[in-house]
Image 1: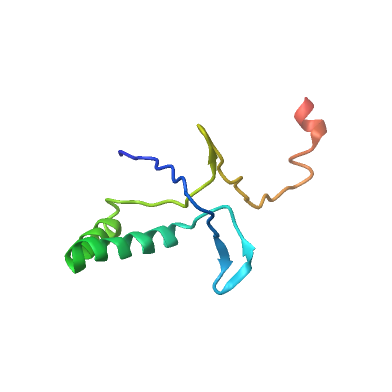
Image 2: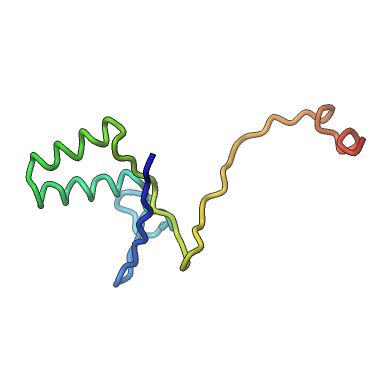
Length: 100
């Protein structure tokens, strides 16, 4: 599967809000649904309903996939740390057993 990484450098300040209508809370991540919505809007402006339909169907068929926009600094990309609940049982994960 081919993929591309786009680095978005904004000329002005941007604000990524976390709640609709709430300006007090922000985030460093631009969500993929927001990117999808913006690209649909641009397709509609540039090519009308035909281009919008083509883009939508390509996304629906997994020909185009989008991810969240994440922060970067020069050539360093910052990915979120996965948070997965871990079921720990003291007997199985004892530090004494790990040392043997």
